[in-house]
Amino acid sequence: MHSPCPPHMLILSVLLTLVVGCAMNPYTNRLQLLLISEEEEINMGRRAWAESLSRNVTISHDPAQVDPVRRITQRIIEAAKQSKYAERAKAFEWDVNVIEADDIPNAWVLPGGKIAIYTGIFPIAKKESGLAAIIGHEVVHALARHGAERVSQRSVSSVGVSLASVFLGMNPAAGQLANLALAGGVLLPFSRSHESEADYIGLLLAARAGYDPEESIRVWRRMSHGSKGSRPEFLSTHPSHDTRIADLTEWMPEALAIYKQSQKAPDAALPPLRSR
Image (cartoon, rainbow, N blue to C red; front, side):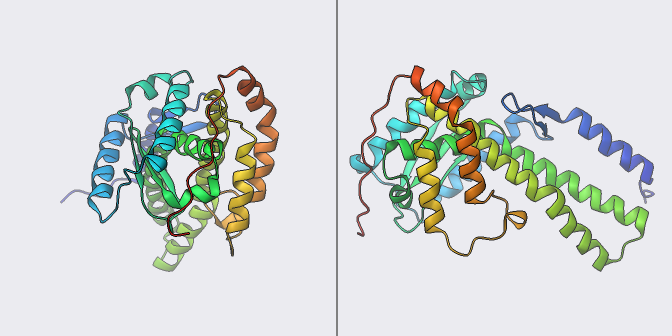
């Protein structure tokens, strides 16, 4: 039977992990903890993509729904290939599907470039520039490796709680309080920083792709009007709508300067939902 690892060895192990697993976001200069390789992360994305498509979902083949989504994603991807994430964007195996789900206002991008757009997001986006703001945001989550970062944070956090238990002799109730404090002080704020980072870089990508960045503010206003009973920001993994709009307004001059130099994209209205 092996003897327990001494506390000082646990601390050394954590510190070494933090040093070896750190990277820096090229846009915001924020340090990121990344303890899994890009290959592992992309494989996780592939598995999640296959699992998502194997569920009882209806993939749209309607040109009125699919064509604008593919047009927007292609322009966003080309902008990404000219960005500070160019190498990663070129290596991704991009794929996009439109999912017929008028009651689900959602969109997501998995590691490796697998994109899903639900038709329920169309009324919020309203037109192609609005959907470009949403897709740009989601694409950045994949390019910036936010998923890998969250996995890494949770891994280190669980070790941190174990260390606290060793040194403080915590009982189970105290351990639960430590987990709650950890979520409030570390995990949720990091998640909010991911969202803000995706807002900022996604705004720049959409502008480079030729979409009016000011539409992003109108999108978030519509999201704000459509959401009820939102949790307080300090207990949420997302910034409040007001915070997002204020941040986007602050970043707008930089995005508009990029937009003025870009080749302008079509900006047609998105198709109405079939159920309406």
